[in-house]
Length: 361
Image (cartoon, rainbow, N blue to C red; front, side, top):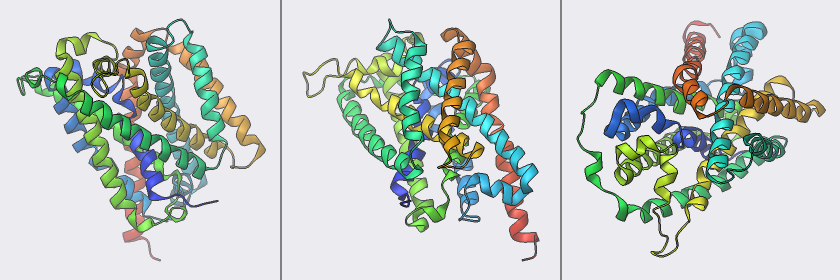
């Protein structure tokens, strides 16, 4: 198997930290932070440096092992499997959220006469095809898609500059401080705690492993800028009141874009950046879950990937009857389920620290 370059790993990492820019991040902060929602996004990424640094700390321990193997090495087969299963359950919930958020966006904005379950089936069939390839194929596809996304991001934000009204970002700090910081913590949790997922690829299977730390930090800063610019553009173009009204306000902003000064209705092409981000994120989630259940190249791997996908579709249709159910879930359940990753971070980092400093070699 060809080794994965740090560019390819960075592409997966960028998809993880920016996927929820569409539909969820702004939903969390726009009511609690009002016109300062963009400040909440900025602060959330500053807080998010903590799990990123912890992820790099874990990555640089036993570099020949992936995260699942490290847990078994650190805690033994029984406790290690318990931690891995807990991690998989949380990843499954994140995958469920990505699936509904993406297919709902596709259905409501593009295919409004198509049942959402049909969109989910087609989306997952494309994902399964990639999941059943080697991880280096997934990484290579991710790099191509992320490069495409960055180009779309630059084009869209340069084109929207003339529509921005900076007065819509004022006044600063006219907010409830408690709600503001809580929303920052929520966004930080859902954007950055799952980055532990990139450790499914051991450092020894990457080219230039010495560049890992630098590339991840740079990518995180780029992802922070992308999210910040997206939130600033949304509020400055629409104003906070219209931002609150529209379900996918980030997409509505794109309707104001005129490429090259005359080409209109380009928002459908530009919005592909969110769909491809979700594709990358959900692909690596399903791959990791299947990897934990069975061995890659085993004939059962493909079967497991189909089973996981079918369960995702069934639960997505059953749990989320409409957007109201989904938003209630985001506000009252999803945030706290993802926050459980803090416990996994804590026990792994503590065990590594203990092994390094107190266990005799």
